[in-house]
Amino acid sequence: MTMTAVWAVACALASADAAIDEEPAAAPAAAATRATLVLELGGDLEEGQRARLSNLVASRLGRFGGLVVTRQREARLDEAARTALAACALDDATCLGAAAASLGKAVIVAGTAARVSGQLAVSLIAVSREGVEIGTAKGSLSGSPDEAAAGVAALVDDLGRAITGEEPADAVGPTHVAPAASDDGLDLQQLAVTGGGAALATGAVVFLVAAIPGLLTGAAESDLTTLRVRYVDSGGDRAILDEASLKQADVDAYRGVHNSIGVASLWTGGLLAVVGGGLLAAGVTVLADGDNAEAK
Amino acid sequence: MTRASLIHASAVFVTAFLGACGIDEVRDGIGAPCVPDGPPCPRDHVCLADDGASAGLCAPILTYGACLAPNYPQVAPETLAESIDVAEPGDLTDLDGITRVEGDAFIDGQVGQTLAVADLCGLRGLQQVTGSLLIAQTDITTLDGLQGLSFVGAGIGVAANRNLVDLSGLVNLMRAGTAPDRDFTIVIADNTTLPPEPIAALREALSGRPSIVLKVCGNARALGQNDANICGPEVNALLRRE
Image 1 (spheres, helix red, strand yellow):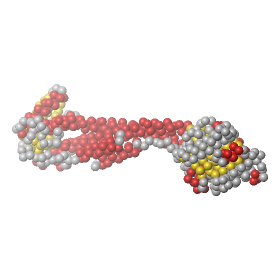
Image 2 (cartoon, each protein chain N blue to C red):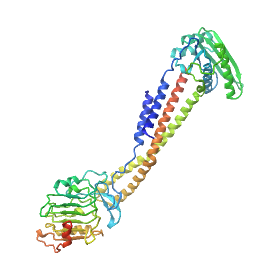
Image 3 (cartoon, chains in turn cyan, blue):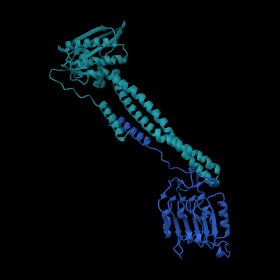
Image 4 (tube, rainbow over the protein chains, first blue to last red):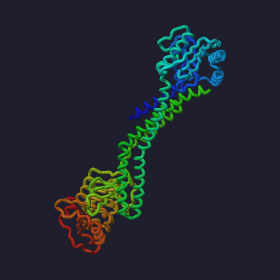
């Protein structure tokens, strides 16, 4: 791999980090749109499932032209806001409305998702900043995960209609939650963590193994220097010369391995570790941000 | 650029510098295989071959006699692709480090004149001369500096060096060739102060090397010891570079 390619990788990593660290760009507020915050769903589902459903809710609501949707995970709420939200029960419209007002949102959407008797029970509520319940959607969904997801999408569409009085558009609304990709977003992050970790570990192992011939070469060359001193001190002991001959053969063998596959393997392992480490760091950072926000 | 990005970039640099480095062949030459008339050993080494064997091992030179040992134990050999003809004493200094001369090496004064060279230390790196080596009409007292010499392709002449008393600098010579019409590969001639003992010692040291045939004539006259051997026309022709 050339240095150009190396820098391309480095720059790509740098760009990825920058994108992760940036605050989401503020969505342009059109006159007829309402800023909407979608809280992470509560309930007893496994965390990954809840996160996917929360993402689904936000992305489906984003299809309604009258809503500018921000998911809680991406909202970067401050400590006070997190505290205010944590204090609200999901059926406490007054509390949720006050939280929406304090966050500058027109609408706040909350809900739960739980597994009950083999079915997925989903309950959603939309509250205005005035503390008025402006929409609800509930349902018990069965079938495969895909079928359940379709059911949740239908519930969210009902909720969106209740909030806006409009039908969902095909296009994505003015929100940074991209419906088509966001459903896979968490999977991509988890893939980055898993794949990055595997690449980092593999790369590190390859790098270390590939370094062995070079290290052995250095050690054998050092032995040659020692033998040289011994030879001169002995006044020309032929046995030392023969010993050095064997050591020279070792150096040639180690050097040959290093210069052929060793160098290439060092490059491969090192770059794999670097890229894997970058993916792992990026994935962990995004997931940790989301988890911290939820925890608080 | 964030801290994480800086770490990534640093890792890329470390990878590049570690991984891109192949290991070159220059290293301590002790024990490396060699052929006396093949590629030379690293500097400060001589190719030792047992009793005229075709191949040997590079060995560090144990002593340079009166010359200081050089400080280049891990330097690649260096070839001079032309003959050398030392006409000034300072010319020898330029040859320090040369391991192979592809041609002749003449270190001799002009006819009837002595070259004011007091030693051959400038030839410490020399291991091979593909042509002839002629050292004549100089002020040297020893052949120290030639301890690395293991091969000469067309014979050696050491002649008319009026102060020469020692020949041990040639003890590491492994192989020597000569012209088709000559029956010797080394001629030691007309060195008027050279006693018989160093000649006998050299003959003994080189006795196991079948390619080397020593011819001795006209030495020690200044010592009152007339060398019984009178140099023949073929020796004189050699010394006249014919």
